Length: 198
Image 1 (cartoon, rainbow, N blue to C red):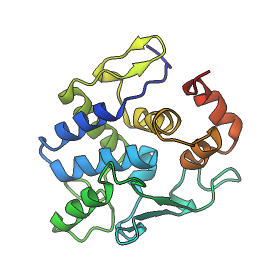
Image 2 (cartoon, helix red, strand yellow; image 1 turned 45 degrees about the vertical axis):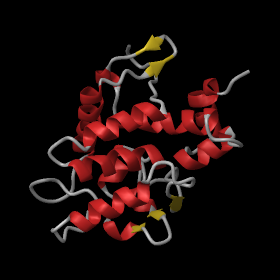
Image 3 (cartoon, rainbow, N blue to C red; image 1 turned 30 degrees about the vertical axis):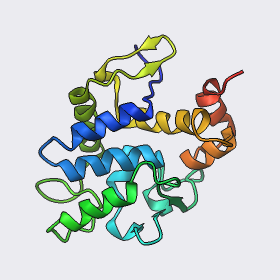
Image 4 (cartoon, one colour; image 1 turned 90 degrees about the horizontal axis):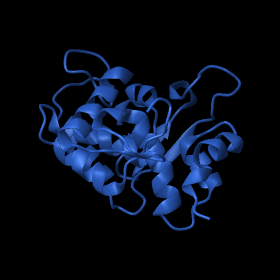
């Protein structure tokens, strides 16, 4: 399906989370899937998030400029604070708390690799793809439906935009732009205006 954008719906994300919880690293993989779907983070950004950037008491994720796409250059977004799971439907805070409390390492990375150091963006993407395959999730696209192999970490980013525009009430493309941190509203319009209904 080439460059076609794919997205998944909330019930498909739940199926992926269920599948993630059945794997070798259930808490970690569920936390990765949930956090990507809640925030719209890029996989490379999540790979560089530290534990200290997450404030579970206030339900916030603070993302410094140095972690964001294209750092350092003039188009790097400013630091941003994400409110996690605004309506408590995803249980992001509970999921992250259970994951962090079960960890026995002292690695500063939010999602460390199994062996040592940080999980890579590729490793994070592998977690998402494995969950989609196990769950048999077929993503949506404008030409119909994709295959489980079409689901990636970036699919969850597209799914945030779909959820904000089609399920959550009151969001505009401007809100999507802010959540996904596009440099320009034109980027958001080009990528996601087709999610709005006419």
